[in-house]
Image (cartoon, rainbow, N blue to C red; front, side):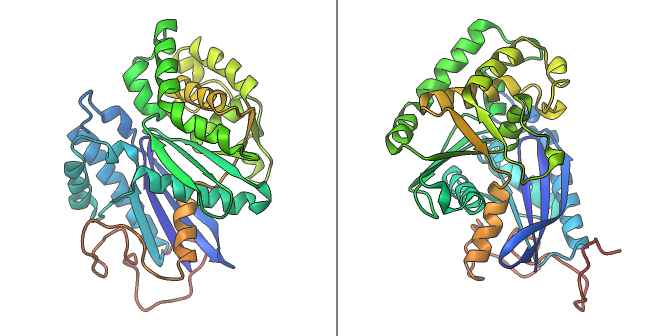
Length: 343
């Protein structure tokens, strides 16, 4: 069985195609299409028409790739940058008319739950009581659980892209006053959930998301080319130094640092502040990086549901109508599927 996940985020549209072997989704192909949707969000929270059109074009290209790979099912969703947009319905309609896809909009708590599911499957129950942190472009997901599913999962408006727009606009070095205001806001927003995590006393804290991966690389973790099975950790003391280092550089200078991509160089200071403040408020000295996150969580939930339909959809679903929850259009009759796209 071949499954695909289309993740429309604040920086890119990411298509992940996986082959299922023994109930485990193994990556077969990955495609990222830079959209930089967060840069098209106005101060009033609306996504510009140009941003919506760029998103629709990227979704259309991803859908075409999923069809070429003859995926059995495609799950497509938009994250916080669309979910929280003031003109969300208009953006989703632009995507539908421009790509033929109806993107699902997952609640933040569902994103946190599915990300926890993926991290728990990766680390195993031997990790014991586990907390999860995931910094996206629009939100921070936090979850905690002792078993296979979280005891609580929630989403906070502490995404790196969102906070950059609100507190650290521009490409120059952020001022001390702006950084102080940002830290105070993050600390206040985290107050209640941080107290809950401290009370739970997790044995393991797992961090997912591209932002955490880049911060860990900046602080000395192994590069991505070493593969997903290399242990990677991020210490709070190293992260504190990284916050200071990132805030002293311009966006262009940050992009030259190890691990910091050009797509996230502007967001890196805000992301580092959120990561450090979360660890500090929750009493966490070190996090373990996990390569599985929301996309893998979606696939795992589908596999564990045994074929029962669970995927949210705001509209009725019809066979081959291009919704996010139906099989992708593909050639017929069915033929054996190679591990390469169809001609």
